[in-house]
Image (cartoon, rainbow, N blue to C red; front, side, top):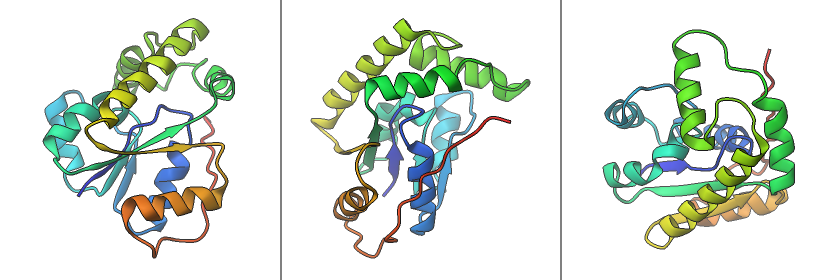
Length: 176
């Protein structure tokens, strides 16, 4: 069984990935692949995969990996916008990762750099997409604002694994 983190960037996806790694899941956070087939192939050896491009292609990944579970990390809109305005103001570094990151950003947010209006539309579009998807799939919504203990309790029940670590990390990605 695969577990996919389908929340948008800046919703606690990096912290969730660290928790899943600490829990013994072979995990990866954000990766660069050009095509859907490359994304599917990349996901095969992992137990937990999240952030872009998963947050873009989660519907296709559910078809490629039947029986998977999905964790949608969320965040209060205003808090999310504030975090995005800092994170997405500068462009990513040069090279192949730059082109892929810009492609992912364009697909998710409708722009390559932070644009408040487009990010608000993307936030609600993603929320609707996940809501529709969750009608037929196993999805846990995990708000950033929940206490660490509540997150752990929800994850244990959702994953059916009651031996998960008792501490939930807060990991902040800082651009250098």
